[in-house]
Length: 323
Image (cartoon, rainbow, N blue to C red):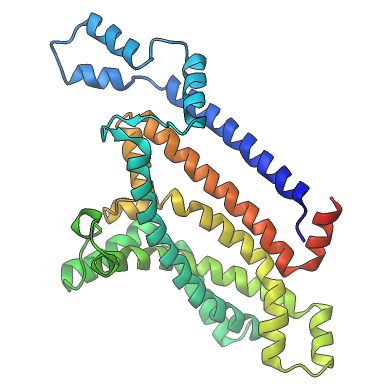
């Protein structure tokens, strides 16, 4: 059983970390040159200094930076994250749909990556330094070395431009289409994300499995008469998944921050592109909340990884209960 003290401690740590990140990001954005008022005035040449002072007073930008952060924090704790200047809508109304499109894209990529990487990594670990292992390692290093933007351009040129089989970008009907309407638009970005990450996953699984297959409990399982399939997939893989869970948890946390390069290349309206557009457009409030949500999901994914450790390895459970 997981102790209440452990959950409470990790929850408190998560809250403190979010508070620190929000303070640092708010301070950094507040110290950046220019503000939304400057952009509003640039679009209206007839506006004068009095108009600038009045607008800054309306938006609270005439107050000291620390006081502005305190006011923002109090409102955020009450569920009011403010409005987006670029979209003229509440921040959450802009953020949540983008978060859903990013999660859809990256979850499909992760599932496809694991479905390929697990059997290939296990097979490579069972035949180390052989011909098949060398071929797998060659393709892994090739995949790791390919820049995502170059891979996206190649896939787009072949399947969208030359062959015309798939759309080059977007997500279908401005995001209002169903899953199957979006599917053709997802194939190229999902393939890009999968090909860019699958090599690393195979290497992690291969390394963890090779170490796990030499452990004492594996020799004991063979001595008890377990079949090779049982030893590999039931005993060795369970131990090997512990370090892999860390990598998956970190990647899961990035689901909601998006893949900036891939989303930009394929015009996929996700979190990565949203954060980029909000920073370039001086929509600091939207950028701040988007970065905070991304930080929260990264920390939550790490907490979930700790819980999975306890399920995969009883020794971790015992240590957690003792502390």
